[in-house]
Length: 200
Image 1 (cartoon, rainbow, N blue to C red):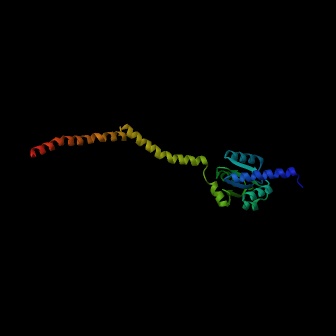
Image 2 (image 1 turned 30 degrees about the horizontal axis):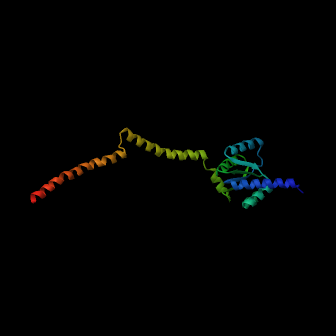
């Protein structure tokens, strides 16, 4: 029978796994059978650089963690060798890296995955793996914004170069145009008074 200290240690691991599952936006469960140390080191480095937390776990402990967070559909896949890759921000990073790795290593298999607290099928995982990286997405968005902004900047510069009118100047000019009309009314007043006097 396990000692109290061993049981406490296992409970701590389950708690950590549960928190990790709850705080991540996506995760993949894989079988790493047959992977050598060199390949494993490279894979871990690539995942770490992409912000993915990857670790080997015991099936019994991950089972308990899945029960605690409601990911019970993962449990049937928890047999043999098991590792889990989770990401707190990037939905596609783990799928992109691990799916590419699985293509080149026959013994490395993706068992299942989840996204936003729900287990997803392999089609969804493959779909995520095909999404571009965060940097590529940001570059595409920036490029889309730059085109209209640069065109707008060219139009403004053209107006400046041609001495384009400034709206405030137009507003100041308006009263000057109305002045003659007011003067005309003033000049007409004596003529009307003279006509009234001659009529008397």
